[in-house]
Length: 78
Image (cartoon, rainbow, N blue to C red):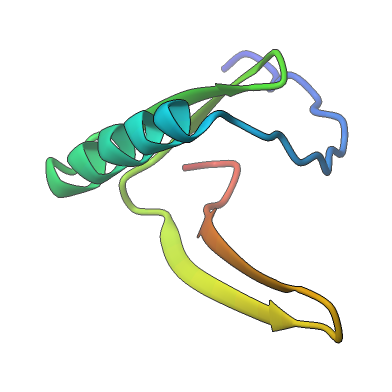
């Protein structure tokens, strides 16, 4: 078995135009529904998300803004 490429830690946010964001959400929903891997490129890095990923929604509220995050989490071995 080949050694797995070491991945650097990463924490970025990427803004998308509304239409691109909607298209990505549609593709994600289709992949989840069909139990297929979802592939996306974010800030130059390709990411492959298994259909078995844990999905959650996070809500944060501060004094001047609110935030909703749709999150997918998976083990690197998946």
